[in-house]
Length: 270
Image (cartoon, rainbow, N blue to C red; front, side):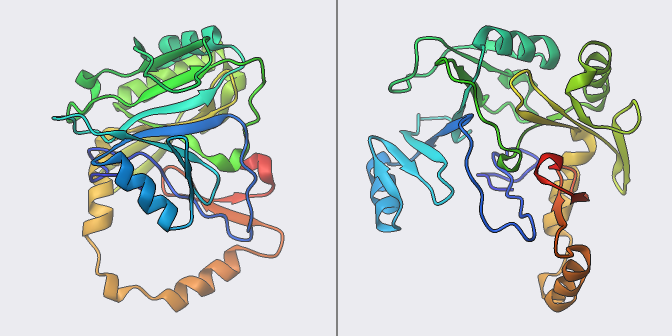
C-alpha cells in the first residue's frame, strides 16, 4: 500500500507484483491522479531531477501513470483529490456508482482540458472512519471506449461488513455478470485473528475492477500487519525459495486485495 497515513485511516494505491511478468502496457481508462502537495513548483522540479517527464502541470511516472500536483489547501487532511477515468457512458457509470455503491454527486474539479461530458462522484466525509475529505472519482466521456488492462489494478472500498454483504446481494440479484470473484453465491469470508473478513471482486459497467472488503477486520488488521513483526527476523532466502516453488515457468502468482496469494493463469485472471 502507498499512502500518506496508516492504512486504517487512508490508503490510495496498492502495489502488486506479478512474478514472471516484466512489462506492463498501460490501458486508456485510468487517466490521471490529482494530489495535493506543499509546493507544486518544487514537486515538478523534483520529478524532472529524477528523470520523469514533468510538463503542462503533469508528472508522468515510470509506469506511464499521470500525476497532477495541486497546491495543498489549508486545513485539508486527505492528499488525493481525484482519480480521473475514461468512461464509455458517463451517465450510465454515474448511475451505477450511486445505485450500487451508494456514492453521491460531487463537484467536478477544475482539470485542464477535461471534456465537457464529465461528472464526479464520491462517498461523503461522514462515511469515512476518520471523517477525512472524500477522494473524487471523476469520469469523462470523449467518444472512445476505454481499454482496461487487468494488471492496472482495482478500485478498493473498505465498507462495513453489512454493507459489503448487502452490496453483494444487489450484484447477485441485478448484475451477476459483473461478479468476478466470490465464494459460490456469497462474499468470500476469511477467518482472521481479529474477526471475519468479507470480500468480493466485481466490475463496474465500464469494466473497471472493484474490490469490496469489510473494514471492521481490514482496518485493524492492516495496523497489526505493519507493527507486529520483527523485520530482522525475516528470512529472505527462504522467501525466495517459496516463490520459486509457487511460480513455475508459465504461471504467475499475485497477492489480492485481501492479502491472499492467488494463481494467475493468464492475463484475464487477475
